[in-house]
Amino acid sequence: MRSVLGLCLIFLANQVQGYTVLVITALPFRSLNILGASVVSHLLNAGHEVTYITTSPLKEKPKKNYREIDVSANNEIFKGEEMIDIACLMDNKVEMNNIFDLQNITIANALMTFENEDVKKLIQNTNESFDVVIADYIDTEVYAAFSALYGCPLIWLSSLRTNWQTLRLIDEPTNPAYTVSSISMNYPPLNFKQRIEELWAQWKWQIVKRLYIVSQEEKIYDNHFVPFIRKRGIKPPNYEDLIYNASLVLANDHHSLENLPKTPQNFKQVGGFHISSVVKPLDKVLQNIMDSSKDGVVYFSMGSAWQSKDIPEHIVNELLKVFGNLKQTVIWKFEKNLNDLPKNVHIVQWAPQTSILAHPNCLLFISHGGLLSSTEAIHFGVPIIGIPIFYDQFVNIQKAVISGYGIQIKLNYELPKSLEKALGEMLSDKKYREKAKQLSLIFHDRPVSPGAELVHWVEHVVKTRGALHLRSPALHVPFYQKLYLDLLAAIAMTLLMIKLVIEKTLSSFYKKTLKRKED
Image 1 (cartoon, helix red, strand yellow):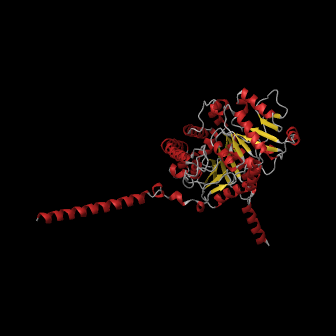
Image 2: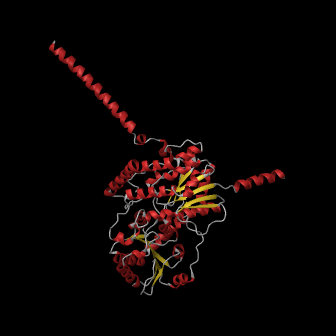
Image 3: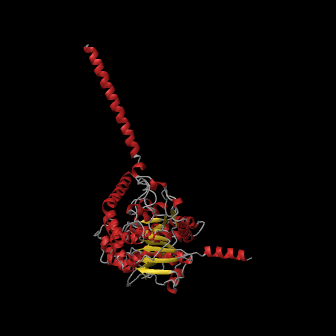
């Protein structure tokens, strides 16, 4: 009896064993920190101990197994940036998706993170240890240094749609003939011109990364991590080896959201893990608006990085006229009060987005096309009118258009006319809503919830000491072998040797023939 009880206790102890996890989302974008906070929540609920480096501290701090390192000072990098002003974008005063600007921002942000006093203490304290590091990947791999410091596995959290920049970290860059970059304005199937654009984009990105960025990242690694890795008695790995040593990618993506390219075994789709299984109730005012809107509700939000209040006043007035002509109710997330609103238009400075989208009267979603918003639209089966501005939003909305549940319009001074036309089409044609509902069914048809799958794979990586069995063999094949350059060189050398032998033989034969004639 005692032996049975002992075995039961051992079994229970193994079941509740918690791991120590370092989670890093250091870029000051609200969407990234929503994902980071969701990762933290799932891991804490599974009984693990989490240290969270974030630019968006949790409002309600967990009382157990949680430590937070606040790097919200990183927001200073974006203060005064024109990229967050919609009016400047409409005037074409800024160039979006410039590869140099994006890389410089992520490098500056990483450097500021590592110079944070609390992060310094974390790095310099030789008593600190973690079982696994989970870091958000956008344009810089320098956070991989934490896995070298603690001698533990690394998991990348991909907050974007599946792209070759992320896949190259665990496999190899995919063919640009059918996959696009994270900041592309194209979406497969690609025509001839677009294939050339994507090929050049991949080459340009690789060249910039190799010649300009890697040296900066390596310098940060050498200055901020290498001395303390050595202090732990560990030989610092080469930086380029380190960044390709990830055990897994947790991708905020799902095949209902797009036709994914081929992916290796350690690329796991957990898109939607940030969406709670329990929809929070609306406040009384919004609940009454949604319930009483018998002709349906149009929900309009440009997300958190770009604000509707920055739209030029005359464009706002024209948009209000467009909305006022609808029989549907419009809920517009607008960051200041407006006067003389049409009776069917309601302004909210903050909107419980998932609760609005979940309501059966919500007919469509006007959005900037961020991946979280796009995912939530599919989750609740709501079609989308997209006004993409930056980074991956163009790809997200292009996918919605091609899949049949979205319409794309441009952010310019023709916005009211374009939006009026798009609203008329989407509200009068039920095919958009039907397609969104169909994809929502696919999105939900999974063996386990995305949150449970996320936790499973994090635990699996720790249990198996890095999940080496899932890694792609492509990582161990040199670049020249992947392209068969050595084979081509061997063939060229062989042909050259044959040519030389033939030439020498013919020359010798010619000389002998000539000599005979002379004799």
